[in-house]
Every structure is written in structure tokens, then in C-alpha cells.
Length: 393
Image (cartoon, rainbow, N blue to C red; front, side, top):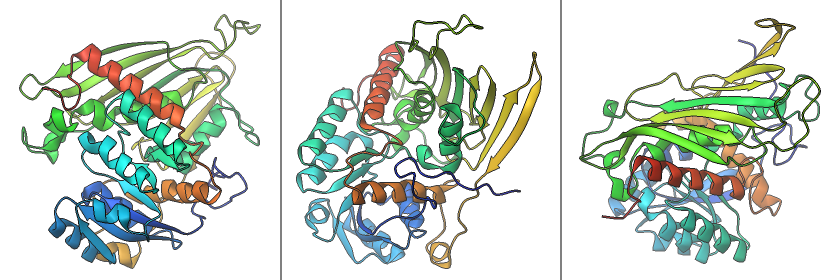
């Protein structure tokens, strides 16, 4: 395997090392599996520290603190948001409580990184972003995929970033899927993933990933969406789905050699928890195609094929690989990671620290506007599949 040089991070193109970042003190709300992995990944960043954690159960918070050598722990969230050592809060609790938890942190003047989904409705998302802006605070949805070097490289190539010698030309299609087999780890029907009122279901759990993959490569918002899928009649959650998105053109002038208007394109997306898919993202343009290889939501490899003259001809093929940082002794001692490539949370955390250090209120890798587009599409999925909103009877 040949390791490629990581591209400079989008939030600060002067930075050569994507793990370079200023100090930041974190508080963790939610002490589950994803919060464990995020805390482990922070150990790859010497400038970052977790100074407090909180869970609904004080025993859970205490166990989490002991495992990760965190100085303060709280049963309930009030204590953490009042902790003056905490500068930013990572929120990884149950989906249904996103709005109230994020609001609590913002009102305590804490910056916030919110795990997916950012909120359970467009209205809640708009309110939280507006509140963060009012209080001059950083807030971001934790779409960590956008911060992996392989994804940054794909963005650079597709959008013709400065210094990229190879381009795919005008993007026409994006294919992206993320499906996992929930019964591998989740009990039916008692697991949270099958609890609609708490924010379970495939749409809120995994659809944000292929949606974010699609919207990254088009310059306009989708103007139409068609959704199919299956809903479990006993629990009311969506088990799997597929969506076709249409992206309108950005110009009415046709290029000389093609009838397709610039910027126009379609995305074919799949998500679910009823089976395990290959999980990759393929971007196709007029001049070639590339694939963000599996696991597409936390990738280490990108393959690019620049089109030759004529159908099926490859003019140039390239492979870029960006392996995960090796686990430290401290990480291994605390139990390693629960999920594949969770080490990659460190790229997202480093970017957040850089943005906050620079006085930014959002990260260019995944903006507030993009979060709201995703929330609109999640609502569209619910409406077309007949899934009732979170919290309703």
C-alpha cells in the first residue's frame, strides 16, 4: 500500500497536517458506544482534552470517566453545562432529545458538536442554528465523513480545486449506499433503533450519510425527490429506503459538445438496517469517475479513473490511500473502538478546534445550510414512506 499525502483541510488550506489544531476542552453528553469512540479518537490529538462527561445515570458517567481518565462526571446534564472547564460539548445522546440538549448547551455559552441527526425536524434545526448565531457560538452536525482525507481529495478532484491536475468534468451522477444488518447487534423490538418515538429508524440513523455524499458534489439544492422503502408495521420505523434526487442546472447555456446543462444531475441513494451493503460512493462526471471505497462513511481509499477517448476507455487510473492513525497504548488500554475506522473522528475534531480557534461559527466541510438541506430531505423520506415524526403517537 502506498500512503498518499493528505490534502490540506478545507477549513484552513495553509495547514499541511489535518491533525494540527489548537487546544480545546471537551465535555461529553451521552456515554454510549459512539461517544466512547469519539473520546478514543481525541487521544490522537495531544492538544485536545476531555474534561467532563455526563449521562442520565451517574453510574454510567462514572464508569465512562474511569475508563477514559476524565476528571469530572455528572448524572444528568445540568452539571456538565455549568462546568466552567468545558469549552465545547459533544452531544451523542438519544435523537429525540437533540433540541432540548443542544439548547441547554448553547444557553450555557458552550460550543456544540452534534452527532447525526442534527435534529429530528427542520424546525428544530433552524431554531438551534439561529440560537447559536444569536449567541455567537460554533455549532455543527457531526458529519465526520466530510473530514476524512479521502473525501477531501474526492471533493478537490470533483470540484476542480486549485492544484488538482485531474478533474472529472461536469458531474452527472452520484451513487451512494449505507446499509447495515441491525440484528447483528440490536435486539428486536426493544433496541433504540426500532423505537420511533425516540428517533430510531433507518432514515435518521443512516440516511444522512448518502444524502451528504450526494449534496457535496452538486452546486445546487435538489428540486425533486422520489423515495421507496419498507416500514415495520409493528414498530413504525423505516427499515430501509432508496431515493432518487434531481439537481437542477446552474446555467442555461449548453456546452458545445453535450446537451446536458451544467450542474444538472441525479443521485441514486440507498440506506437501511435490513441488510449489509458494500457501502461505497461513486461520482461520475463527463471526464471520468471515482469511487470512495468501502466503508464509504469512514473511508481510507479513493480510486479515480479519468476517461479515455471512446466508450470504456480509461485514460488514467489513480489510487489514493490514507490509512488511519495507529492505536496508542492509551487507546488500547481503554478498549479500542466499537466501529470501523472510528479513529477518523480525530479529523473532524481537529477541524472543529481549528474553526473555533479562528473564530468561525461553522465549518466549510459541512455548513449549516447543508445540514438544513439534509433535514428537509429526511422529512421528505418520512412523508413519502408514511413514517410518523419523532415523538408523535
